[in-house]
Length: 255
Image 1 (cartoon, rainbow, N blue to C red):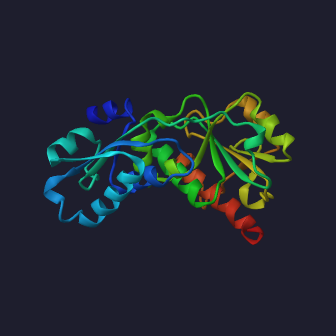
Image 2: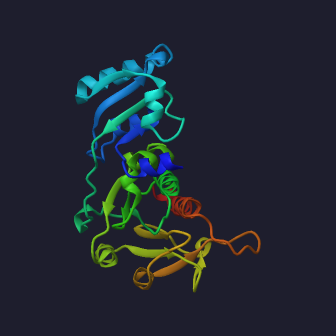
């Protein structure tokens, strides 16, 4: 647990081929690999991956360094690095402007997620569901970018991310977007709500939820129906998955 707390403070280490490949291939992030480390004892097992990485290293200018399992374990959070880890630069997350918003798109604003893994799982679901971009509040988990990337299966680096500007709701409404926020009070079922694009979906964490100001700016409040009487809220990641794929379902004939 102490090790993970330390890693939360430094998001520069990305572990495993999925995360490393996402950094290499992202067209939506300016993050770059500085140094890539691999376990010398796994060189034969990693031969195909290393061939690919050496080719990309020539293109992108990062160093490839041979090391051992002990050093990789010291650098990384978990045990899922598979013999590969990378030291990376930071990433610029620009503030959203009206010019960034595409016509007839699907955007998500995430508020109040308390855990970097949950945050990563939410990004994974929203990327898979086809969200154009995710908008983040000032307090977010991209400071733990390596953890987020691993839990999102690389989606955090592949996804467009924006910082929330002042007047977010007004910017989207000026572009003709509907805004729906996920909450429980005075809410309509997500399955009975018209979620056709263009749409801004607002999802909050299970503890802090969505701010009152954002709820008041929404065109409607939606909730996820349960199959039985159950008082607990879904995790933000689970809610993002259900809501994101319902948006995809309602708009699948428009793609």
